[in-house]
Image (cartoon, rainbow, N blue to C red):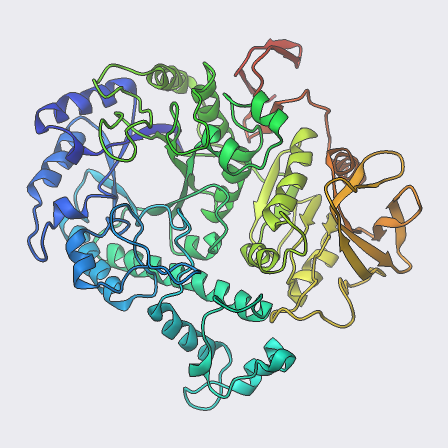
Length: 640
């Protein structure tokens, strides 16, 4: 499939007189895709049943006449005022019991049946009108599920839906559910938390101290399932009227719902990439790295999500929104280093993206995002990002098609584990994403190309290393598949630490086939109290005391086991710093005969089926592969 470029456009924001000029400029720039419509409900239907299609008909016709393909969004992320007035209880409620309000976006609760009916109605009307339009070549459902902390809702609608969800999870005779089974599974005998009926179960907020972790984990799973249901309703409607592929645009470091489960109903996964905003807002980088990468973005954060969403999309994925200049929402909003918009684009293509779409075409002169850069300034003069997009468009004319082959190293990512770590972090600032991302970084520093896999994966044929750190609930069939595969397998810390109802299993974790290792106890560490590992590196954050007859392959300076192995399985009981994780990765790769390379700081390598890419995320020159790579430089070479 060809690599293509696109942009996000809001014709309703601009005079009708300039649409043809905009479309012509997009086509001349070399763009293929234009996403429209995802926030336009109030212009499509300003009052109930009063549909105004003429402007959207014209916009799609204008774009199509210029040779552009339209990605049409469903407008359900921004219900207009009249919908909210009709359903005054449709707003999500935060953990403190405060309802969200009108005046921004994503102001709805996924569990509200009245709002879901409104969504069915508007999506049906849009899909009926444009499902067979030849210019509408793809769809997007809603916009950025989970943005602005909008997955968890503590509303009355959520409460009633949660009770029904629990009845189905703990079935009894008839439709009543088995409340005794729930009490036993959750350990509700503790603190006399037992229930007589499912209708007594409330949402896990506003408790005096922490709620039962099994209760919270169940609520997290329920909340994710509500997103899946909401998305599926839209997908099923669109499919009645259109054969075009359907996507959703996910976000960076949003783990509040299971993206793999949503992706099962979609043809394409997309995500919204804002490297500079994320550096300050989500990466968790040190102050030194924030300064060093302030105009480039973290060298691994975007790559991680490229690999994640390639898995969510089952191989098909895009960047639906690519930062082209300063954004408006991070703590600090610098301009990208010259060349970085080009680098970010090629980095996405190196990880298999079919399309990279820049957000947005023209900077808005009004409302919340007026300081968010576009490819054009508000006066329609080209902005720096335009020039770099134009360069990429020219370079694409002789680039090979998207060609991704299976990597030798795989990393399992599990949203359920992310919720479990949030429910019971056991230490300040500790989370599953951070652990997995630290290990991913170590593989990247070693020049290793990585696949990310869903927790449902059971076939590991072709992989030489498979890592599943921190996956707190591991079904027996996954344990068996990993223990029987031909790869070097890395688990821990905290892998298989809980059963499906958040109980510590007996035998004690990890209870792994053929691995004589037991976690006898654990401790979390102050930032100023790392435990040094013999011959280099340290354990930070999390340290497990390991017992058993397996071979110790890494130990502390005082002789305590940090990592133990039997056969091809290694259990690591510590969250390593960079030095230790680099040693661990080198150890695994050497055993598996996976080539590694020590890369200069800020330089990353990515192999595709046909090409090898080198990326310099530094603001200075580096020498790599016998060449000098300048700031924000990219080397793209066909493989022999």
